[in-house]
Length: 391
Image (tube, rainbow, N blue to C red; front, side, top):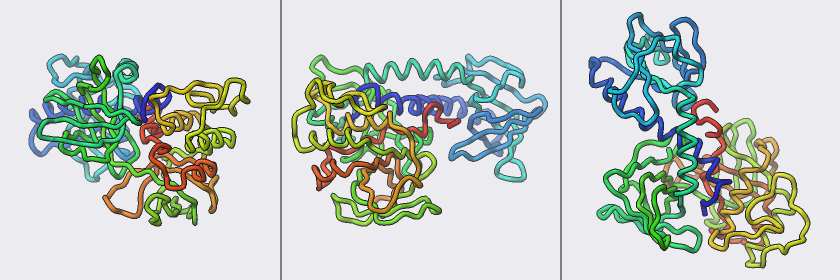
C-alpha cells in the first residue's frame, strides 16, 4: 500500500534526514567517549548565528543556544560518516544556517544553553545530496505494508503489500528505525531492532528484491504502530487542537490531536466518488471520463490505469499528498473523515493525527466497516517535507 513515487517522495526526505541523524550519532559517541563524563551534548539544525552563539532547533522544535568556546574544535563530517577519522577541521565561519551540528560541552545554567568545546558539523548541501541519492534508492528498491508475521529469532518478517505477501529478511547490517509514538516527525524516529516490530505494525523496507519479487533482503527498515480511523466528527475543540469521532471499525470514541505537523486535506467530490466505486469493487473509470479536479491527477484517478498490484488505499494516499493543506478550522462537526494516527500509548483513546482526510462521505458509505483496503498510509508525512529538521 506504500508504493510509487507520490507517497514515497513525502516520506523519503524526512526518512533520509532521520538516517543522516542516526549516522551522526556514532560520530557523536566517539566524541563523547573522548570528552569528560560531565560533558553533555545537543544535536540540531542551525537556525541562527550571532558571533560565537549558535541557535539550534533540536528534537521537538526546541531551541538551544550553543556558545562555541574559544579554542573549541570544529569538525566537518560527510553524511554517513561514523567516525572522526576523516573529519576536516574548520573554523566557526564555516557553519551556516541549515547545517546540522552535534555540540559537546558543558551545560549552562538552564537546559536550553550549552558551552561547546567540540562541534561536529554536517553541511546542509551535503545532506541534500545524500537525500537525493537515498530518495532514488527508496523509489527503486523500496517496499512496505502491514506486518502479518514477525519472527525475531530468524530476523524475518512477512509483510502484506495490498494482496501480495513479501518475506522480509534482515541481517546484522540491517538498520532499524522506529517512528516515535508521541511524534508525527520522521526526524524523531529512533534506532530500533527487529524485535520491536510487531504484527500489525506498518513498515517501509529498502533493499534488493528477489527475481520473483516475493522476498527482499532489508538494508533499512522504518517501522511504526499506527491506527487507521474513519468516522464522523462529533465535536471539535479548535483551541485545544482536538476533535472526537466514533471509529467505524471499533465503534470506540476516539480523541484525535491535530498538531501543526499533521496533514489535513479535503478530498474533491469527483475523486471521492471514484474511490467509492473502487471500494465497492467497481471497475476503474473508463478512458474519456471527465478530467479529475486540479491537484488530483495521479495513479488510480479517472482515465488513468492503476497498477493492479496496488491497493486502492495506496492510490488514495498518493492523491492525498498532492492536495492543498487545510487546518482544523476548516473542519466541522458532522464531517466524515479518514485518519491515520500515531498512538503514544497502546490502547489509549487519544491519538495524534499524521494525516486527516475529509470529504470522504461516499467512501465511508461504500465501506461502512472501515475496510483496510481503503486505509490511508502513514508515510506521507508532510511535516518532514522538505526538510525534517527545519520545517
